[in-house]
Image (cartoon, rainbow, N blue to C red; front, side, top):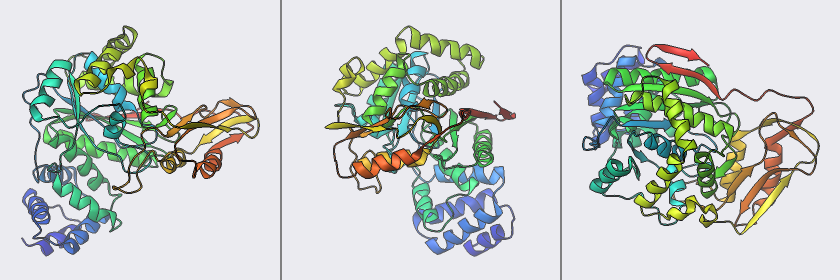
Length: 441
C-alpha cells in the first residue's frame, strides 16, 4: 500500500495495520516520505483519532526508529516516572532519592527545559559540578551502587518523534491525544523502563487544561503500556497553581532538599509520596500503595532519603555539601519582595503566568539557544485559600538582571488574585488511572 492510500484510509476513519504504521514512520524518518504527506496524515489522525492498538503500534514504530537503552545489567525492575509538565514541578528531584532509598532502582533519562523553567537536567546542573554526561558503564554502575542516576537523553533516542513533533508544531496537530500519548510513551519505552508511572497535569498551568482531556490522555498512555507489556499507572494531578513554592532551578533544588528533610511544601510532599508509592508497587517490592507509602515516609523521617540524594549528587561529580549547606547553591545578586497591595484571601494563582514571570527573569528558555540563569527564579509565599495582609510578601524574586523586574512584579501581582471571600483550594490529586479503569480521588 502506498503513502497516499494510507493517508486516505486514515482520513476516512479506518484503522491502519501494524505494517502500514511502520511503513509510514520508517519512511518519514529516512526522508522517503515528505513533510506534506506526513502533515496530511497527522491532520487525519487529529480528526479521526486512533484505536488503542494503532496508538500502541505507532508508539513502538517510533521506539524502533532509533536507539533503545538496555538496562538489563541493572538489578531489579526499573520503574520510570514522567510528568506532562507544569510550574514548580520538582517531583523528580524528590522522587528519585526517595524511591532509591526504599531500595528500588531509578535509572532515568531526562531532558532540558524549553519554556517556563529548566527541565530536570537543568535543575540538577545548577548544583556545582553535577554532570549528567556519564558513560553507559558508569551510569549502570551508579544505579547498581547507589540505586539512582540521571543522564541526558541522547540524540539517537526516538528520532521519529523529534521529526514528527516539529511537524505537528507547525501544522496545528500538537493537541491530538494519540499523537501526544505515543510521543511520551515512546521515550519512556526507548529509555528502558520496565514499568511506568505518569503524572498527568491538569489546569491552567498544564498542557491539558481540562480534567476530562487529562484523563483521556492518561487512559491512552495506560492502554499503550498494556499493549506493549509495560505496566503503567497514571496520576492526574492539579496544576492550576504552581506545585510547591519554588519556581526556577537552584531554588527548586533547595525546595527538594527541604522536602527530603520533611520540611517541604505539603502539596509537593503529598504528590511525591503518591507517585513514589505507585513506583514501589510496580517494582514488585511492596504489595500495595499503603505499605509503600509507609516505607517512603520512614525514609524521610530517618534521613535515608536525604542521604541518598547526597550520594546521588556526589556519584555524579556534584558538590555534596549543598545538601547540608544549600546556600552553596548558586545565589542571585539581589532578592526583591513583591508585596500585597491590600488585605484579603488568595483566590487564584495563575500558574502559567507565574512560570512566564520566572522565564522573564531568566529561569527558562524561550528558544533552544537561550542560556538559563540557574540562580534566578521566584519563591512564592502564599497558596490559594490563604489570607494575606497589605504589605505582606506575596513572593520573592531572585534577580540577576534588573531590567525585567518592574514588569515581572506587576505581572506577578496580577497573577496572584486577592479576593474578599474564603475559597477552597483546588484538590491536588484528581484521579488514578490503571488498566482496571479510572478511580476518582
